[in-house]
Image (tube, rainbow over all chains, first blue to last red; front, side, top):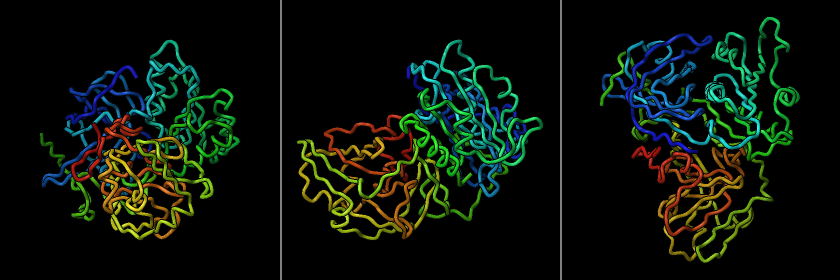
Length: 244
Length: 197
């Protein structure tokens, strides 16, 4: 990696917010002191109540590069503590404490020398860091072939639908688990090992693979990838679940 | 720098003096691993301590248990802000495994069966502070949680408790392991919030 974005505490201000799919919000946060971040990294948000009580959670960043505006898509965890506040209560102009950028492993950088194709596999809101990678690839003239396989419940649950449709350098394949889009080529249903094989780079292409989603999704998919002949050392995984 | 988030109340029911700063209590047990979960049988599992002189002390599944397992009840704290309190474990104290190890090194590189590393000071592994754990919540440790055996160093953030632990290699100076090269703190004390650097 040629650049290193050092982590630190910053104060951001919400520049805009808009609904993102059925249960989430897209936040654009201006962070004047933000050093920039690699595609795929995350940050911590720390909320402080008037009496000093604090709670922190980690969120993947949907944006990347040397910018001072970070974009997040926060899915509400109904029983959660921080995400309901971000989804329902946070307003444009509000200030937030953020710590980051964090994580230098589950990242893709445009100067990456590895010419092998890159396979992104998202389960639900796990698409956020992978969208950042596909968007970063979009900025480059030359580079690895990209594919994104995105498993999501229904078309209403898709994050960054507009951004995904605009990707010219990443082939996007959708798998809807509950209800398909009108005219979708596949019937709704959970991903299987066979459909995974069909919709991703084959093991012979020796792709680098990034998988992000809920723990059971990542466990299942990475197990299948190994069975399909992919080298576990080529598979990078990010799991989430729990505390929202 | 004190930003107050108006209207933020938080879930006070989870406040507990045993929770380090920035941590939240969970009832489930989240999984965080950099890659796929490796499938390692107890037959092929082994654990080795390698000294600076190149001397190797090795245990397989049977000889590890011969060293004497004990029950542990402890809190665990993950750098991603969740904690579990009063969790029950069973494992072999690292003190037992170091009984015959001659070393003058103060630092350890912990290596796992799938090739990841994390660095831990030797002082954090001895004196009843660390175990090679084989059971959690009364059950054999599952593969996704590091089974058949993982390191358990509960007073440090949980990434130091390397899953699928394979080796401890003595080092004269502290060097960052895989996780630490990727931004995590060299020591990782949850009470000091040593999360990142």
